[in-house]
Image (cartoon, rainbow, N blue to C red; front, side, top):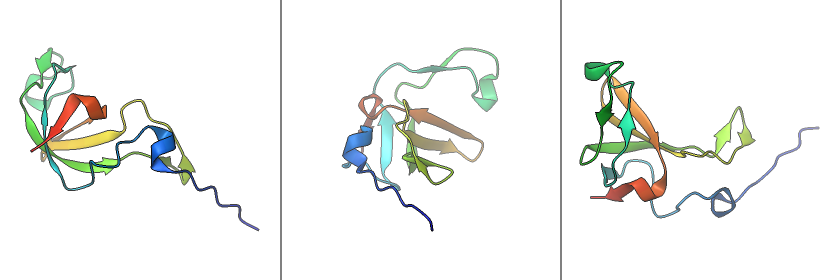
Length: 90
């Protein structure tokens, strides 16, 4: 017998206004070190635009409360995770 756990997105701290497929812009200074064109060097993503590809609420079919739940794809080779307050919908 399988047990299914249902968790509301609001309880996980996920903004229900932002959804998969939305175009977003990074509105705060976020420095990453894994950008493919600047690998190993600090790169600020402020002002960069991308598309929301996932809102992380589950991992291996278990509910999670991710610190950085919004996954944004900027190019074919580059994705990054963000908090909702670091992004704005455009």
